[in-house]
Amino acid sequence: MIISPRAVIISVLPVYLLIVVGALLRKTGVLRHEHDAGVMQVVYSVMLPCFILDKILGAEVLRSGSVVIWGIGLGFTLLLSGLLLAWGMARVIGLERGTGMRTFTLSAGCQNFGFTAVPVLEILWGSSACALLFVHNIGVEAAIWSVGVMIMSGERGVPWRKLLNGPMLAVFLGLSLVALGLDQHLVSPLRKVINMLGVGAFPVAIMITGATMVGLAETEKPSLKIIVSSVLVRLALAPAVILAAAKYLPLVAELRQVLVVQAAMPAAMTPIMLARLYGGRPSIAVQVVLATTVGSLLSLPWIIFWGIQWLGLKPLLP
Image (cartoon, rainbow, N blue to C red):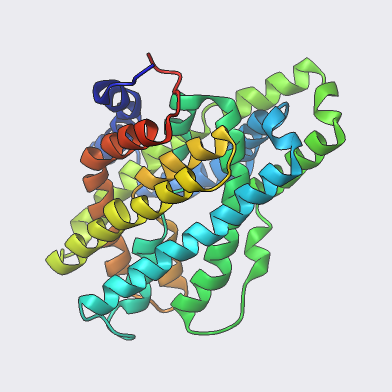
């Protein structure tokens, strides 16, 4: 079975349309700034953990300890490879500490690993791949809150308590239940409640992301140097490294599927928050996120298409 570029574009289009919907709701005043914090608190604390549990419970691929270790390890090491590529690019374009080097490194080096990645992965490969993405994200989160924070702050202290959040606890709970075989015994009404709470997590979060981007785009003055270099790192160099890992490492198919989608992702929004918390330059992080998100409208379908062909994967799409 050979997937067409058109099929990939159609599959990922709903995610970008939800971003547009969020932007339109913000511009028309339906979704106001004061709504963002409360809505995202519900998403992050309740809806997303339920979505994660719903996908992990019953996932046969996670009954293998080696698969779990590979997933976490690749999440950590490939994030570090992205940071290294971004640091090298920062040096090439003349950024130094104090002029945005740290913020650019973290922003361009960190791919979106949640709200944009999950819907695309689920459309292409279903629940099993999504379950493994959440395990992979343990390594990503660990890299961001250790190496990433040290880069941004210039200090050695690591705020490990930040890892004790709802989504991370849901992953550990789900993995524990799967490892013990207890996930098979959860009664169907409880599973249904978990499913109902989690099903809206990503549509709502993606709309909030679109609304947030409108405000960011209106307040930041763009720099061509930052825009071009961030797109080169995030949408060209980093995908090449991630796809090479997927091709040549001894991985199960589900983890290769995760890496194909991760290779195509734009920059994550977390570094904007970290830049504000740890004395970085939020304006640079905003430009990186906006530039790579807009750029991914064109690059994402093709990276996924080429990755599928190169790795010989079989998506659910016709």
